[in-house]
Image (cartoon, rainbow over all chains, first blue to last red; front, top):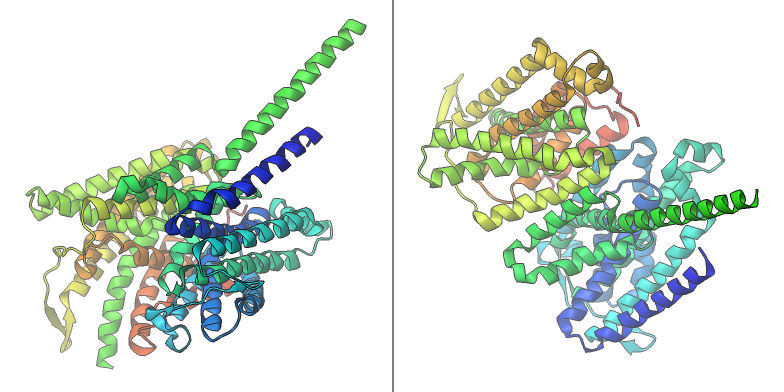
Length: 332
Length: 291
């Protein structure tokens, strides 16, 4: 990437971040709620993007980890724990469970892996619904308090939105660092060619499990934010459909692209709001839009951009070649 | 013990329906690597098509006929031409995601254009019990079982005994060689999609009188069919049949003897154990088409 392009990228991200901070200031309660939800779902989708997009392991269990996070936060904060302590515990739990869920991935791949994780999702849903002593069953847990961050209460929608967007920022930075670290390269090697990765001395076992564990932790973090956002947690939002939706977000946005989950979550969370005018038809339009997009570009929205950029780059390169060629001929 | 027999018969009946759906599922996977996440919705839709035709005043038999034809057209031909064909060359995952979106679309369309409420559906088998060896057994269960077995036997005969069936198997196992020896592979693939559409329409006809016609009923059914297909063997028609029957019986017994709350967990645990210890399924061969 040239220096000019990098400057452009930095300027663009500053504008986007500033926009995300300033524009919602005069949004109403509902608008802020939807935007906060977008931030939360983006975090969860980023986790899945690491597992699927970078490490190439299909998972239909991300929704279950959001559920674990949400229930962890709900149960602990209603018992007087601070949210940050709940976050710590959830991270540990999700890491361990995600690590264990990775073991099937060492034996089976593709659709088999999808179905193992699907089964895990369904089992977790049953636990949320049936273990009433812990989760209060179908009645759910209400009156979940919103935390104080460095002494600032976040009870109002705007401060809580800032908490969500701030968390999203931190997670994005961490992810950006991870992808560029040797670990990120190892994950991609795993996706592209596991056998070659292994022959180059990458411990594919460990990295497969790690991809699941870290991806699951991000799902848990999203859940920890989800609980105080809705202030009410019941089993229904964490059924299999959430996992399917998150998978759709990653693929539609563009799996394996850093910005994919942002766009995917935007389409999944914000598009239905924009399609309100269509009333009962909006989910149908949404489904049709996803199908048409995937037929046109199976690598998602960012796949279109990527194709456009690489074709421009090839054109630029061939133009340079042609110019050099003619110069060479003139010199001879 | 008397209760056990009832449970097993009822389990076999639902299991036979799962088997029909699972067979269609494996057929699509074998011939065109399509993991159809909308398979459950494919079973839900034909019942509503039949109901719609009946609303127009047609008698039940005509409605069934039109329903089966429509489902062959929509869920067979249109599904293949409009969704699977353009996406197939891009690999398994985008296509699987597209079928997830399709499932949402079908569900919402039924909810919007028909009804969000459950509607009753006429049964092709009369209600009542018959006495077998001094025990009363539900006629409906037996009827469902009989029709499903007939369908499965017919399909197996088609696949194993006829030239058409052999061509279909060849097209599934090795499309390149099949093409070389003159099998019209494209037509064979289309045929499996049509067979799948007819199978789901049949399953719809059998299961809807028991569980009512509801837009969301496909979710459970689709999952049961996936599990049946994997437990039995993803690349074997008879594996899918065995898996379907097994899941039906296990599900019923789990509900009665283990816990109604966790009945759905038992097939899932079976699935996880199966994948971990015998990924090729009960009757399946180890996957031939490795990537």
